Image (cartoon, rainbow, N blue to C red; front, top):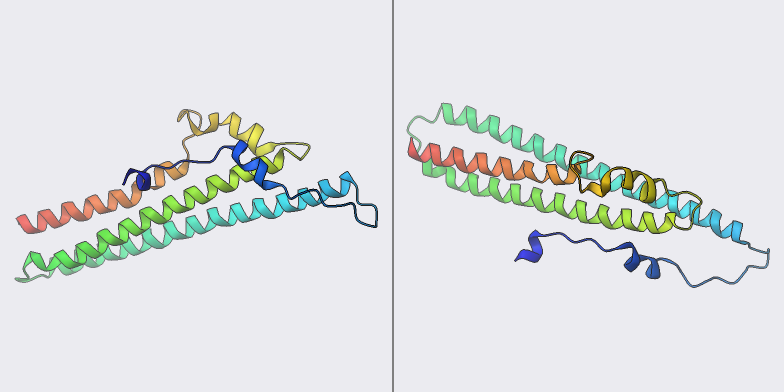
Length: 180
């Protein structure tokens, strides 16, 4: 069970040996190291764009679930104010559905976090073949590699608490409704 709750990330030393294709023979047009570096730069640009798109999708996922939870909380408030003799136990099925939805949100965020972590390690490995390493050697080091919250607290660590918070509020609301 703990392997589903903790996250691990590959080290760059594990990625580098599998990143590069076997050396391609020089083509008839006289392909050179400059041509290979240009190709590496193009692949790097595409890969960084892919990583950015994963981050954008994660943002859209958060927006979707935040909107859904806001809608549900608003609807629950309106319905509960007009309950007129409705037994509170009727809330058990919607609360169970909401808790499942919060769990799905949590696992989606976790999956995006793992996917982006892997992508940024590959980006770091690609940067080893480029003249500069703005992300891997510079920015990430300047941010303390996410280990020191006073320098940088990765958003992925914070955003995973949002679905947990909603789930706790739903459980507390259900307990209060049953007790009332």
